[in-house]
Length: 198
Image (tube, rainbow, N blue to C red; front, side):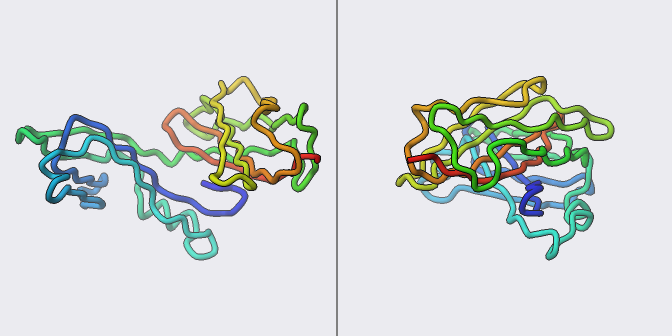
């Protein structure tokens, strides 16, 4: 979920030995996704694929309706290898959703010192039936072309990080996100923007 924008999405990462196709079934046995290589890709095989659903805002698709589309429970992954073998896996989706981190710094649209830009946030309470296991901080340089990104994964006991001055440039615009991630993999982010001094 994006707590700042008020939207949610469904993300999947597939990774296996070379495969021709993969299908995903929800806990009700309904096929929700299918992908198959064609031509040269089918002959060579696929090994990894990441996708995410569109992320409609809660005004368009309220969270409870979104969660109905993706029920909690066991999702089955079925595929076929290049050699004709069967691929099978499963993953459990929960509805244990963290709250969005309360960002402390940098303040929205503030001007930051290149040598002392600290991203900080309040600890996020464990969601019912789960616990926060880590945070991720992502900072994007909105002024650079191509866009530059700094990211760090931090243990749940850490609630601040100093952005390396080597990553920051004078007079540039940045967007940053802090993601709270619970033990089942669900994550909720909060985001803000700042600018560096010239």
